[in-house]
Length: 298
Length: 208
Image (tube, each protein chain N blue to C red):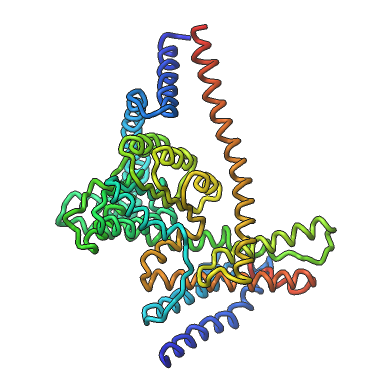
């Protein structure tokens, strides 16, 4: 308890020190003359607001991770789509059909793909436990390598290394619609019982989801692309919207690092809400323009 | 139209109809088009990566004195260790580099590109100076942003006041999705019109 309090105090002192000593610099840097001077320097003083945000963000995540590792119970609300994952894999097992998992169609340098690959690890662990065939078509070689790594790891963790099939994660095609055409053909021929789409999707989202629907599969989708989400909502049984995709991995694994990260993000969201409310009040009473400039994007 | 051009138009029309045939059901004609499509893409990608990445981004800079491109080159080469069951673990360092760098870069780019502008643009005056319409719009923006943020708050059960706010948030999200849906459908319809124009004007027009 004393140790946790001390750690909390250390973090808070760090944050407060940053705010007290660095904020005046931010305000100073907002003046155009200074901003012009600092642009060429090694340290962008005008971007210090981003630094403060990152420090607060990382501190919150580290603090919650520490708490999670110490065994402090951290509550996460239910996300309906994720509760359905295990049920859907169970259905595939009963029907003797495969589970199709698509970690999006973007490269590994997209954060949604990383989230998708991370969820793939959790899904692969369930398929390994149930001995359910898993099929993961990918569009990029790096996603292929990452996918193979996490699926193999999941099978090892489930104690089913011998059941791991390297070809379960396979490169299909490098072009968006040839990938879609191939996966659609696979869906109609193999009729997977469960289709899980988690990652970055574009114009092919409805083509995939509609074909999966026609094949009679249970479908769970998740993406952070607002323009594709309506199609998934229309054609899938469950949809994870936006940040739910990033929360999914923490929710499924309940690992301290992941849970701590999610709780830290929630804390920052609350800070943002408070910051917005203060800003709205100041703007309404036409005072504190300096405060609004703290959030200037440079 | 020359004989070669007519052949091209017929080939494209055949492939278009073959892919459209999937709307009826999976069939051998669709499979032919699917395999041609996937095979051509694979071949094209090999050529594209060889030219735009290996030659233009690694070989040419390296031979002109930019020796530091060797570092990403080596990281790329490490991926070939995946062919060996004994040394495949070495490739993980390349993967870890890409995944770590992505997370770091995205944190800053999203912060600058979305988070900070969104926060600042939400700090609007509700004093009514701009007239009734502008004030209502500002109220909608503030309520929309805050309630949507609350919807994505995972640390508490959505019950009571938090639940009501989250429900308002989901309404805002759904209205936004409706607008996106309509906008995207319009785009898809224009793509269909483009294909139909090709079939009617270029293909049917070539023999009528």
